[in-house]
Image (cartoon, rainbow, N blue to C red; front, side, top):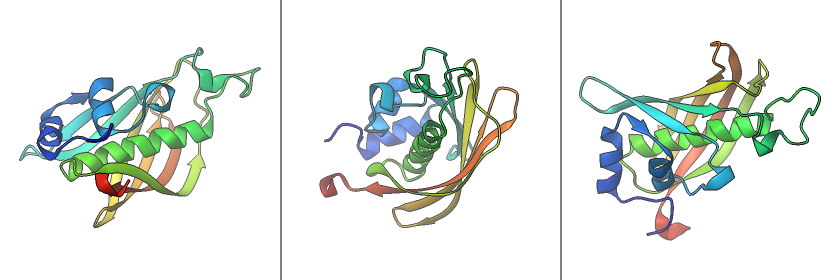
Length: 167
């Protein structure tokens, strides 16, 4: 089995958890180190115990290497990194919704609006919502809020779940 892909039984175990931390996220996503831009995920379940939605979180530190060389007079977390956070959270939700078959892939980005700058000290909350699904293709609306509940980013992310043998 390739890194970042878990079997169906392990994925079903992950869907029962309330939170996913780095170790669990690395079982879902092929990202490591700096590329894994979300810190943890809270899983919310419906009345039947199925995954209903998730909230991913990331704390923005002034020491974050993504801030180096970007608006150095007043540090602002880069927009492309926020889009990556949105894509990773969407991948986690898609993976959990189908019970973990396949490796999540980023397929497309739709309209994106940056509303409020994200600054060091902010803890962002990333909230993907499934809009449509057709087979292994998922389309999500993702909203990212800062700790003051101000909308920072609104975007649309398309992702896919690939079979491990197709990679």
